Amino acid sequence: SQQGEEDPQALSIQEGENATMNCSYKTSINNLQWYRQNSGRGLVHLILIRSNEREKHSGRLRVTLDTSKKSSSLLITASRAADTASYFCATGPGGTSYGKLTFGQGTILTVHP
Amino acid sequence: DTGVSQDPRHKITKRGQNVTFRCDPISEHNRLYWYRQTLGQGPEFLTYFQNEAQLEKSRLLSDRFSAERPKGSFSTLEIQRTEQGDSAMYLCASSFTGGALDEQFFGPGTRLTVL
Image (cartoon, rainbow over all chains, first blue to last red):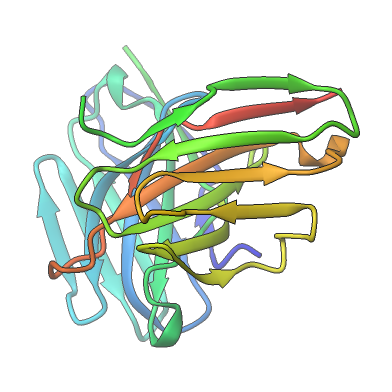
């Protein structure tokens, strides 16, 4: 079953604008990861944030994590047409299931040139 | 290319036939995962191996599904007596647990169509 939900389900913006996607989850986690998937292809790892971290940056990506609200957000700044893809958050649980990822349903991002 | 590879990339089969997929992980990775993704959904965990040991299986993995990683390197996923509901993208991922992070690297997937 899916762990969390992404919001919005679809997002359409113009090139140069910022894109923000949100993810909520239900159970305790060890880490939260964001992946990108271009149409019909494999997933590309973007960034991982641990449960004891609150914010992380990588290039044009900024991820926040609020474990008290069980939520995370991914911000893509100065978007490009090449950022058009589906974005998934995935949680890595603590305990004995360490390593297994539980994905949300994804946000479809379209960046218009 | 030293990434995760999967073979075949596409498979079309008739209902009731058996199919087998192969995954070759990144060479130094000791963990290997299988996920299934249907259209419009995120990937769902099926099973994972640490070296050759299968450590966890999802309830999604019915008796018709079997996965092996005989020498702790490549893995195979077999589906027996395929059903139309098995149509999906089957994704393999690998990771290395010796480091501080458990980042998973995904292969391109095998798209299965059951007619």
